[in-house]
Image (cartoon, rainbow, N blue to C red; front, side):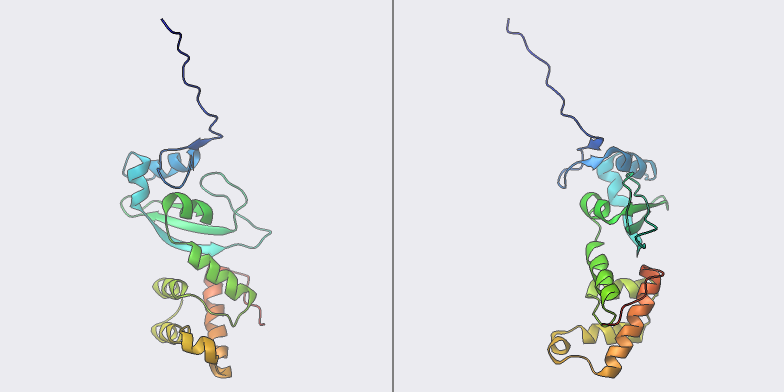
Length: 183
């Protein structure tokens, strides 16, 4: 009778590999998200969550992700549709494990933090509007002026000033204390 050796378990480094695509998920993130969900499994629990709010912190005041990673500067507040619970998760965990669309928002916020006259992308404009940070008129102006025509032609000085004003409003919520730099 041949001698069989039990299969060797790979070292997990504190990660759980139940999520399918996207790689291993930190145990703590799985435990916290499932505990705050109605569903009892990771696969079902992660489907209950939506992106509620995003914000960027200054380098000297980073936060901590629900998975335990520190430091994080790109924070995503996620809300469970069924339980009403919330969690603060880093942008990396939100994108990689929960599949929520935070990446384009942070890209746009970083762009206007560096240059106050730069344009937000459509996702960031719609997000800011949905959060109540900008009004109907500001949304329409922004969506009109991110079209290719304006990228080639450029904005008038008055349009640029209004864009900077809108960007400052957005950053007051998305990156409190940062403001925009005027290039």
